[in-house]
Image (cartoon, rainbow, N blue to C red):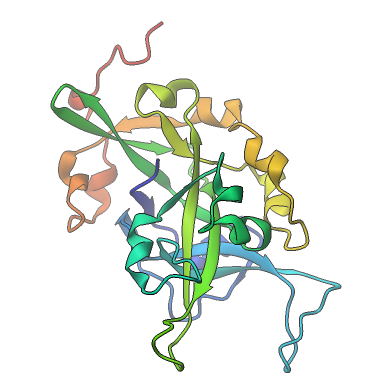
Length: 250
């Protein structure tokens, strides 16, 4: 699963990394070492640009950074509180689940992150780990997004929200938790984001890249991350004395 992650890069850096336009304007969230559900996050989308009358141009697409609320609020929801329970969508069932199936076909995104946190249980103790790329590149979590308006108010503003897709953990990650975010390598970004592709069954079924997973650093970190009020670079610092050094021994 994915319930917390870190996002510390500014929009300009993300725009360059994901070959996208920065459309966050002045709404981009601040550097966040402890991103939690219902917070605003940056996502990458690819859409047909619209003219002054709102008509899309089918001949081209534009990839851009957008700000979304983490926790997908289905268009049919009576209120936005349901979003707090929909931060993740299972890749195996999202295409047939009422809350996510339209987004699977028409509104897919990437959620950039420095890495994500997961907790390994050892008896009554839960040790947090931070999964990240040692080379400093962002990881791209496959996501879904949608637009919701409060049905009780005709002039209610749009709320754009997103969920992170998860899949079975593989390789060394399965030693910590049985689920992981669905990570997409750059060669898959175009197909995943293409708004004209509705059938992504093959992409949903594609397992995480073994090379990417094996390259990840699984870093034991402080339990300070357990409290969402804690937010600073110290959350990412390695705490070697907390690690089970035999965790991945054959």
